[in-house]
Length: 94
Image 1 (cartoon, rainbow, N blue to C red):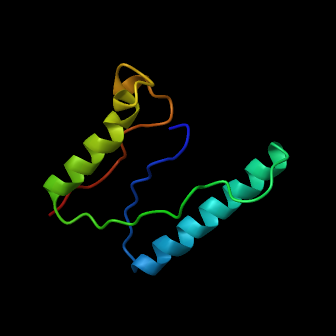
Image 2: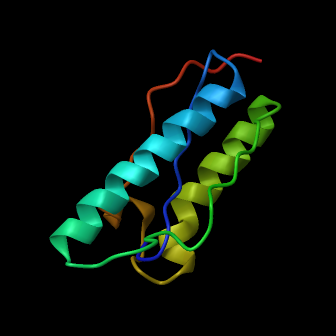
């Protein structure tokens, strides 16, 4: 997406680890972006949102939402045309 991204993560550790990972990811990208484009300040409008997936049905709903987002925003006509996505390799257990 031009102004945000969706990232589906599986963590076997505490949610604090996800928060630390996201902070590092966004900070690293902000350094890269600011240096590359001679920009300063915040790159992301707001902090990330962390949602826990509670069931297989919830997982499928989230995957479909992420996959269809570029189509809903009329950036591509089919999800597979979006170059920055792909179905993850996951083990689905409930």
